[in-house]
Image (cartoon, rainbow, N blue to C red; front, side, top):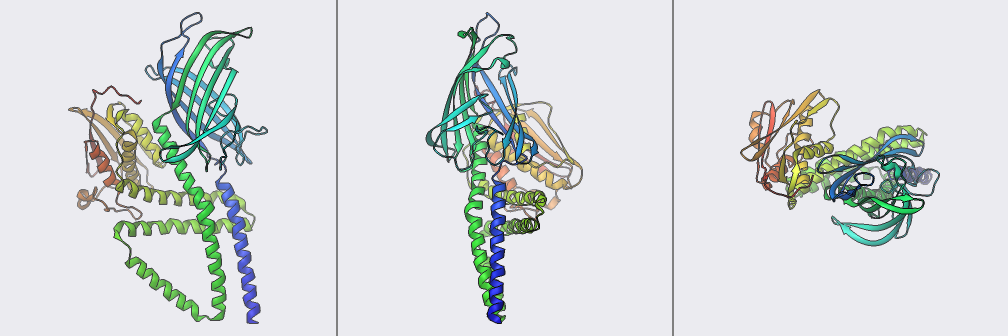
Amino acid sequence: MMNLHIRLKLIIGSLIILSSIITYEVFVDEMKKIPINYELISEHEGQDRVLESLNGNISDPFWIRETLREKAVKVNGNILEITSKVTGIDSATNQVIFDNAQTFFVDRSSRKHQNVDEYFTFPPNVQKKNYEFFYPMMFTKTTFVFDKVKTINDLEVYDFSCKYNGVDVSSAFPQFPSKKIHSDGKCTISVEPVTGLVVSFSKEWDDYFVNDGIRGDQVEIGGKHTTEYSKAILADNAKSTKSLYYFLDVILPSLMIIIGIIILFVVILFEKTKNQSKVIIETQNELIKKERLSAIGEITARISHDLRNPLSLIKLATEGIQMRVEKKLDPKLDEYIPMISDAVFRITHQINQVLRFVKTMPLDIRLISISSVLDDSIKYVPMPKSISVKLPENDFSLMADKIQLAIAFSNILSNAVDAIGKNDGSIIIRTRTEKNNLIIEFEDSGSGIQKENIDKMFQPLFTTKIHGTGLGLSSVRDIVAAHGGSISVKSPPTVFTITLPQNPNSKTASF
C-alpha cells in the first residue's frame, strides 16, 4: 500500500512538473513577442542640403536632427497596428524640413508585416544572413545584407547594410507639386543578435527630379546617424532585454528542473519517514542563520533582502499564471504579467543603484540644454497621474554630461514621487542663473523630511524607505560633485537645490 501511495505521489508530481513546463513555454513565448504597449523613440543627427526653390540653387550644408517615434495603437489578436513618424528639423532654425507618417500592421511573433514576407524589425536570435525588410526609416522594401560583427558600448552587435535606387519620394516634398522625385541611398544598421533590438542606424541619401525617366536637378543630398545619447539608451535597453532572455532561457528552466527534482525527492523522503521533514526544516533554518551571519557588508545584506520579495512575487505570479492556464482562463495573464514586470523593475533598480554607486563613469562633457535633460529624467520615472510636474519656462545651457545629469535628476524625482505617495500632489522644478552658475530646484508637496534626517540624506546606506538601498542620493551628490557643483536640501517643503557651473564660452554643441 505504501509503495502504491508513493507511486501515486510521483505520478502527480510528474504531472505538475509537465504542466509547469508547458506553462513556462507559453509564458516565455509571450514575453518574447513584440509587447502590446510597444513604443520606440530614437534620435538621429547629420548634415543635409536641400533645393531652396524650383530652378534655384541647392543650399549650403546644415545640421539636421531627426526623431523616429513608433507606437502600438491597437492590437487585434496577434497583429499590432503601429504608427511610425519621422520628423526632421534644421538644428539652427528648428524649422521642420521633413515629416513622414506611416502605419504598419505587424505580426507580434514573427515581427513581419501582415500578409507579406518582409520584416518590420529583427526577430530574436538574428542570423548572419540577409533579411528582407520594410524598415520605417527606409520608406521602401530593402534587403539588409550581413556585413560584420562589432562592439558598441561593450555590446556585441551584427552590422547589416542596404542599398536602394529610384525610390519615389515625391510625397515628401510638397513644396514641389506635380514633380516626380526619386531617391538613391544606402544604410547601415547595428542589431543585438540575441534580442533583435536595433542599437544604431545610419543612412545617406541622394534625391533628384526625374523628367521622362531621365535624372534631373538635385533636390536633396545628406546623411544621418543615431546620436550617441540614443545609442547609449538603445544599447542599455538591449543589454537589459538580453539579460531577461538569458534568465528565461537558461536560469528559469534550470530552477524549474532543480525544483522539480527537489519536489520528487521530498515526496519520497516524506513518505519514508515524517520525521525527516522536521530534520530538513531544522537544517534549512540553521543554514539560513549561517548564511545571514556570513553575509559580507551592509550592501550585500540589504540587496539580498530586497531581492527576496520581488523574486517571491515572480514565483507567486508564475504559479497564478499556471493555475489560470490550467483552468483555461488565459485573459488573467493581463493581470499577472505586469506584476512580474514590476518585480523585475524593482530588482533592476536595486542593482543599478549599487552599480552607479561603486562604478565611476567618465564624464562626456558637452554643451547641453537643461530642458532636454529634465525631459529625459522624467521619462526614467514612473509618474502617477495624480502627480503634476511643472517644468521651468526658461531654458539654459551648460557644459555637462547629459546622461549622468538625467540619472541624478531622475533619482530626485523618484524620491519626490515616493514622498507624495498615493495622494494628489505636485513637483515644481525651477531654474535660474547666478554668477555664472545654473541653479536647479526640485520642490515636492510630499510629507517632508524629518529634521534629524536632513544631515543624513546624502550619506551612503542611509534610507527611510522599506525597499531603498540608501545609495540614490549619495550617487546624485557624487554626479553633481563630478561636475564641480553642489547639492543641498531643506524641508518643509522639501526642496533639493543643485548648483552647477555653466561654462558658457565653449563652442561644442550637442542639442
